[in-house]
Image 1 (cartoon, rainbow, N blue to C red):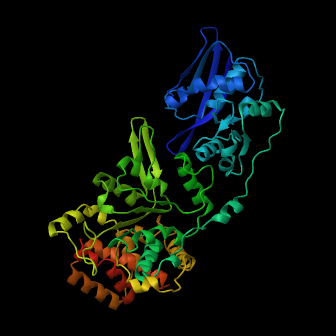
Image 2: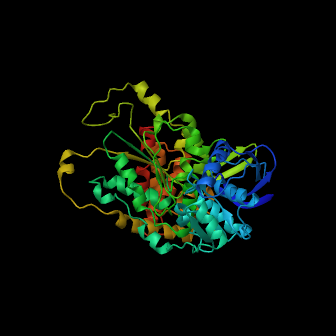
Length: 507
């Protein structure tokens, strides 16, 4: 007898429909799974028999063939345990389920017949809605994530036996519902705040400018200057997430198994170690998955000790920084991962970290300093708009009690500047000043006469390149937006120039 059950798997960050076909015929007892299953799918054969028996059903002593269609798509993970078990029960005649085709099923079975959660539930729910499959049966732990889409009926079950009782009508299970507004009440609730950071007003201002205009930033300073402390608080001044952004972020984190079945309601902050490989940073693998740049989508990617990262990994950042996405090509096709993030990098001025510090002597030779700085390629550095020198605070300031500006106050100014840019670029296909093309820079970065004269003098005296010239104008445009000024004025240009003054001195 043949049974067909609807299910799903994950390919990249997208759900993909799979039809589970189960055929039971005479022959030597055993289970054969075909359709390009990976090892986790193959091992389901050993889980199914005790799970079915411990759920109170008789396992058929016949030859069982399970086909996962389409046969040319690699299947991975334990998504098919529940649909295969239901298919076996129906195909063997042990259970009659007339409404089986009205539902889709995913879930991993434990040996006692209970259901365990699987990753990637939100991409699966999105695909189910797209295919107009309105009823989805999932493990209890996955129910909240699956029902973020209000037009989808999600039925949580805790075990195989409970699922069978529900399908037979012996047990009523209402469709799971969540209050999206309640979930969003935790938005922007962070454990850290910029009011915790004493002093560093110049660094805070530079970070405010970077966030407002979408400008990548590099912080250079001695150990203990506060670079990491400043960076980890950056998400607290980013604008609040919209529902569309939250679902997009949750979709990526769900495919990677990082969201624990919950809606992601705060901006991501990813801080990979400098030993990270280029695949872990960008994404990929035999079955491609999202990397750190995609997990930082709509948030912050912080690279501490930038020169210590592998050069291949740093060079791989150039495409997502330019295009806002990662394209991974495999023999079976191409896959795109969103990767629109704000890059925040930090480094020491030299290998020992004390070059230019007034309180500690530098032990590095000139050759060592040059070699250390040359680890960062010119093309990567060209994609970083702001270079910020972070200096250590004097001990007296650390001991002094003072009131610092909170993250919410800074965020209000950031949101106002971003609203100005959204209105400016509503028909341009971009969102931030940092993404302006040369023609857009000419159109929107208008300088008054004094500002134009100051910029010309700076270019001549500091030997700025043409690329630096454009970046100064874009950063000045953001500073003017924070000042609610249509025209870029002298003090806007002056501040923008100081964020590029390290070009000649350091690099």
